[in-house]
Structures are given as structure tokens and as C-alpha cells.
Length: 108
Image (cartoon, rainbow, N blue to C red; front, side, top):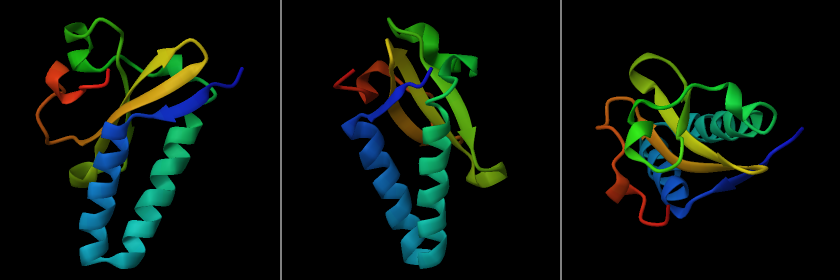
């Protein structure tokens, strides 16, 4: 079974901010980061429910799952929910950022 991937405006904005920040420092690295991110997100289309719940999931009405992207200090959490046959990407957050709050997702 394959799930459809959908990004919230919030997740797209966060990804664009990271790409812009990397591009200012290393243009080719920004393209690689973007391509790696897309590949990681697309991998969720096959088995999204195999990923663990995010620690802050209990604060929300729906289950929020996470998948880690990249390593060490440059690690990000891709936070998503599964809604029927859709994987909805809610947020792309650096691991050092505070946990996701309900107010962070106005459209959720």
C-alpha cells in the first residue's frame, strides 16, 4: 500500500528556511540537503505507521509520529500524522528546538 504525501504550509516554510540558511553558507550542500529531505519524506509513503510516536504526540488530538533525518548536530525531526491514505508532514524541526506545541500548527 502506498500513501499520498502532503505538506502543510508550516512544514514547507520550515524546510525553506533551513535550505536558505544552508545555501548562504554552502550552496551545493543546500541542494543535497533538500534532495535528501525529499527522499526521506517520500520513503514514508510505504510504511508510515512503522515510525514511533513523537514525544509531544500526547498533547494533540491525533497521533503525531516522527522520523529522524540526518545525523548529530544537524539532525532534524520530520513530524507527521497519518490521515487515511495520506501522510501529512506537519513540521521539520531541528532536534535542538523546543518540542512542538499546538500553537505551532495553526492549520492542524
